[in-house]
Image (tube, rainbow, N blue to C red; front, side, top):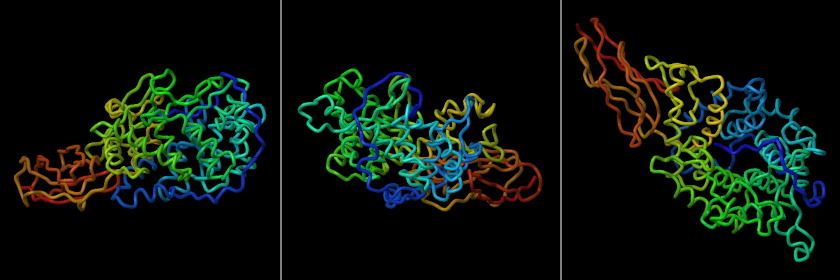
Length: 469
């Protein structure tokens, strides 16, 4: 699953002195629209907005007064994941604004108070959300998130030859906390994104340190070396330099969103993109990394989104198709205990079976929320239907009890739907080819015209057939 930026700390690390706010020139105006990178990446391909829209509807309804609240109270990290996902979906200003209004007064709970506690990755992620919500990260609720982030970014020493260790971790982020340091590559990528967009003098060093976390074959690792290790670079095959799919995808996404078009960044993105494509299965799925590694929608959606932003549209659409298969839609006669949660995305397919009978268990709701927040991004590249949505009966009339063919056209690839006549139904999914779907439905008794229909998550089509006893 997605490696969250945690505000809980357990180990201390020293940090070189940084000037408060040094190098911040200005933060360009922010908007609550999808990024220009996403808009341009989608411009050349035909995508279906339905799966990301219905997922956004569901996750917005999960908010409680603008916050994602779990069994242990408000989860501010998941709240920001939700906000960043909603920013990618058109016309979600109300949901983003609700999160912004609720999160801003609780900012220091997430990023630290700026004195004893200050969490670098959380600062970067909060700044990314603030910008996405149309706010200025330099003055977000009276807090200069960029200046605080600069405080947590190691300086380049005046004479690197005299301070080789300080030079080795120049640009690296560190947490300041009485309970330790948990800064990692995911947090570093958010820091690079926001320092770059704020045109900070520390952006280049932060970027260079992030690029050192990429191994030779193209992936990014998750964790840094200890601060006293001389190289501070990913070394393929060495302990601590294992590949991490989620960290790679997030590093790519944040580098793209940083608007840094330098040659080293372009080269790093190309290598990471090639590595992700190589790791993608024929089904479109991607496997997570580390303990408990498994194929899941979080990793697949993040990887697919990163590849989409890199204009790897075939790979991005394959990933989106796989994620969409895990978005159950049970309507009309196909109704299940998940019908009231239409739009939700399961972390894995096996979660759907049980929840279809019992509903989403209270202690599992957190997992479904996390899966859906990330899925919204990957679903941005779901391919659209090639045909007009409709259902047709192959015959104009038939006898009661006969099984008659009905044809459904215009389902998008992997789109779930329910087709039925009175008394009989089928669950169907759109084919990858986009071709028609043919099923036989048994006609009910009664001398009258009967309706054959097909229902998707947000649409329906109808036809009629005359039934004779």
